Image (tube, one colour):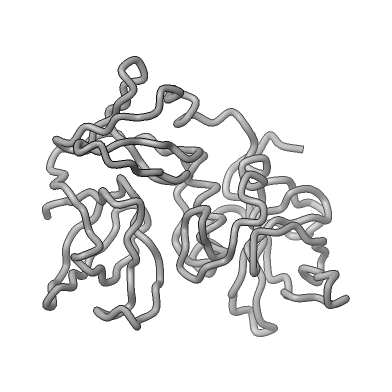
Length: 258
């Protein structure tokens, strides 16, 4: 099946082929996908990164064919670049680039060459910090349902972005993410970088965040914020009560943090 690559900073991915339909996710710059169906000016796609499927408006889309598999490089910070027509784009952390040339300050998407700012170097696509330190970069970023980048993200979009920067693919939704990794029995055994999941008394998962340290979690709720967490859940000091009930904690990989 033919692959395409997104060349817009992001494209809304909607449940149905209409702008009034809920945005369930976003396709980020450099991510690849295949086309499943078409209705009028709408195209149904499935992304290669996390398998999300939904509808995109072709007016939003800038794309190239992606017939030859290439290694992508994931940005860990914003990158200023210029298209062939010399118009400016600012790519966000989590976007992907191909064939970076740090000497000539360029990267390539299919046949298109993008010129970057002169500070472009390998540190834009390598990571030498902990998951929790990466998570802290996004403190106070606003909450947007379906969002996956710093200008607006939801709870599972936030955790997915942080792990993506570290080269770890998580599913799109919190309940799907909860199916990955090793379960931690007691919160006192949780370590920085572990994922915590929250939800209803019946066990349905509706929220997630990243453990920062013993007793603290960073999560997207209204904004990316830090709150106390214990065996009952997330304690929100503004309301002097728990805002989210703890369901489980998962360790996706062995961490060397705190």
